[in-house]
Amino acid sequence: MASNGNDKRIDYVEFNVTDIAASKAFYGSAFGWTFTDYGPEYCEFGDGRLTGGFTTLGPVRSGGPLVIIYADQIEDAQRRVEAAGGKIVKPIFTFPGGRRFHFADPDGYELAVWSAQ
Image (cartoon, one colour):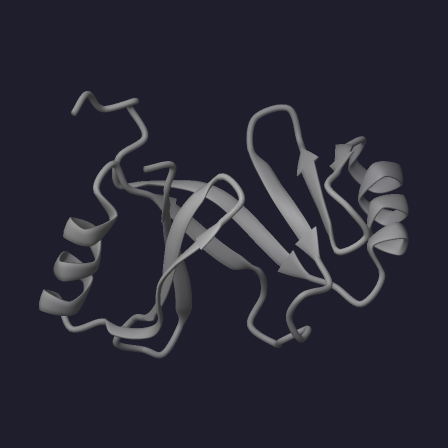
C-alpha cells in the first residue's frame, strides 16, 4: 500500500460546538475561514492550510478541539497507540469517508486517528 504522505501527521482538527452557524460566523469574520456544509450536524472549515470540522454530534468539552491524526494503516496505528501506553476510548468505527478511533494519551488528552482505508 502506497503512502499518501500524511502517515502519522496531524491531519484534521474537530470542534464540538453548540451552534454551527454561530461558529461559522465567528471564524469566518475573525479569520476569513471558508466552509463546506455536510448536513445540519457537520461543517468542514478551511483556513487556507489546514482543514477541520464543526460538529454538533458530541458535547462541547473543555480542553479544546479534537486533534485527529492520519494513518495509512489504522489497525497498526491502534496497536502502536496501545503499545505506547494509550487507552482506546472509542474502538475503530466507520464514518462517511473512512474509519477512525479515539484514544487517551497518558495525560488523559483525547485524540483520534483516521484512515481513508
